[in-house]
Each structure stands twice: as C-alpha cells, then as structure tokens.
Length: 112
Image 1 (cartoon, rainbow, N blue to C red):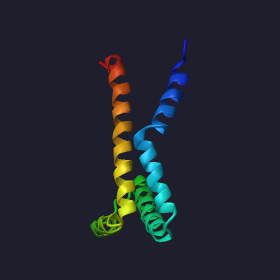
Image 2 (tube, one colour):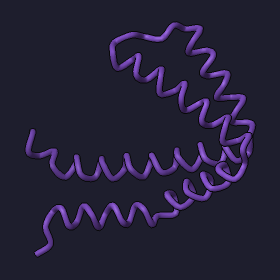
Image 3 (cartoon, rainbow, N blue to C red):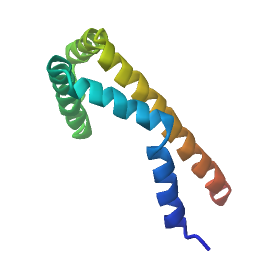
C-alpha cells in the first residue's frame, strides 16, 4: 500500500509537470534572458519581500509605501514577459489553493 508521503511526492511531481507550473517556468526563462526585465522583477521582488518581513514583525507599512508598491506593480506589469509571469503564477496559485481545499475538505469532518 502506498503511504501518504509517497502520494504527496506523487502529487508534487504532478504539480511540477502541470501546464501551470510549466508556464511559470517558461515565463521565468524569458525574463532571465532579458537583463532589463530581470532587473525590474528582482527589484520588485526585493521590495515585496522587505515589506512582507516588516508585516511579519507586526509593523504595518504606511499607505504611501503601499501606493508606491502598487504603482511599481502597474509599471512592471506593462513589461509583456513580466505580465505573462504574473498571470502564470496566479494560475498556479489557484491550482495549489484548489489542492489545499480538497485535502482540507476531506479532513473537515474530523473537526466537526
């Protein structure tokens, strides 16, 4: 009989091979091949990470900071390759959320 862990690894492989994951990979390769796109994305991700770290320590970013991030997101989303990546990441996140929901729903009866 296959263990829960074996099945989890099988699910992980299925996710890796999914169209959604492959779209993220393809989009990332296109960005890696373009220095300007890569620099813009790296800068955005760094700022995003810094903001998330602040929030994890309980420090809420100021509205001006949030506005700046939103504006930056809009600007870098005008880059076709980055826009493709963001869309691909969004679609992959939906698949992962759906998988989490399926697992949670299956165990929901344990907690009434």
